[in-house]
Image (cartoon, rainbow, N blue to C red; front, side, top):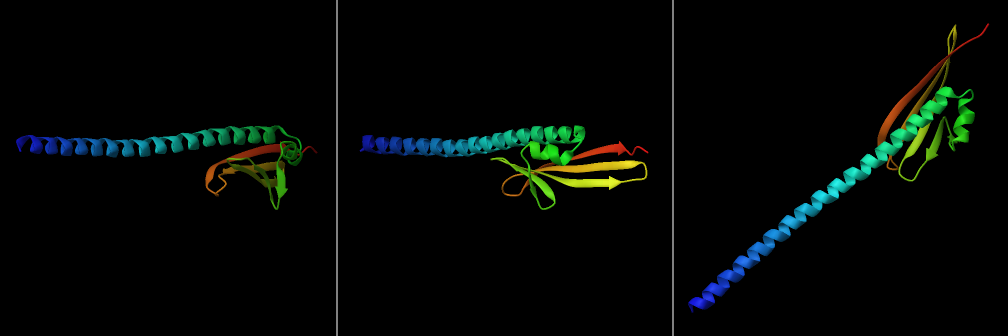
Length: 132
């Protein structure tokens, strides 16, 4: 009778140990999945930031900003230029402000996810003197 009680106790202990390892594995899987999601988001953000900086630099140097946007693959939609990528959307809006001494070209480069969450916004401003 004592042998049977000992084997039952051993079986219960083994079940508890297996359940503990299953619980630990489930928690670790959730942690790794969350880390993967954060790494993917960081990759998208880095790619989007590089894209926005490139667009802002090219707009700053361009003589014809609208022509430059069209050359980069942007499409005109209502009052903004839009470039759709697989993981994010780049939108350029803004206009020209005239002053007594010249004009101020103001553009805002905005990057959002396909769901509409804003990842970043980058202003691009260039001043040109008006020649008499």
